[in-house]
Image 1 (spheres, rainbow, N blue to C red):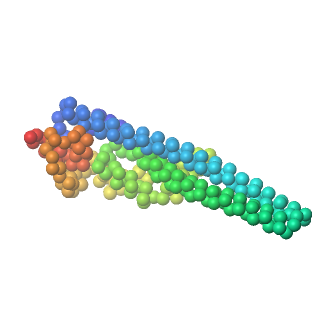
Image 2 (tube, one colour):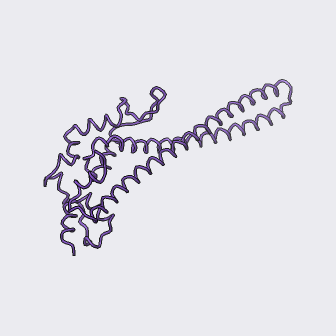
Length: 241
């Protein structure tokens, strides 16, 4: 089941109507914008990472070429040049070699940072793909579950048969992790059809209560309240002014 209007209608309390439709439209728009933004940023970072890799490779090739030139010149100087000339060229070549090494180290650090960003955003994208199989995941628990998956499992990008894959140390995919988690008792409690009713997991009474009247809240505030504390949202909507 997709995260769409039909799905949300059954999860958001209140009568169907224009106001409820606006809230649903805003939730879906925000959800899609988040997914599209992550995908765009992830692709941009992958391109940046590839560009940095190419720069490092080019500079390392240049360094190897320079080191070879230093070696050849050093041999020539030893056989035919004066000691003063030899010292001059060795100092000049050392300076150029050191500058190249500093540049390479700087780019490698930048590459490390870019790679970390790519890994983080890949994790978010993989999570979004994995939980499509669990449309009843409580929206209020979504980010916490994602952070739990990424912190509890050490994911990395691995080359498997010429394909880059996002896997744990024991080669599990995000879908494998999600399946195991939602089959556990703690995972089941995050699913809406597992915690209906007024129990501890279904009751949102511990959330911060709004200070505004329903009519004074923006659509975004109303939609956030619906997702975090549906009982309070329903009560305020019924109370009106």
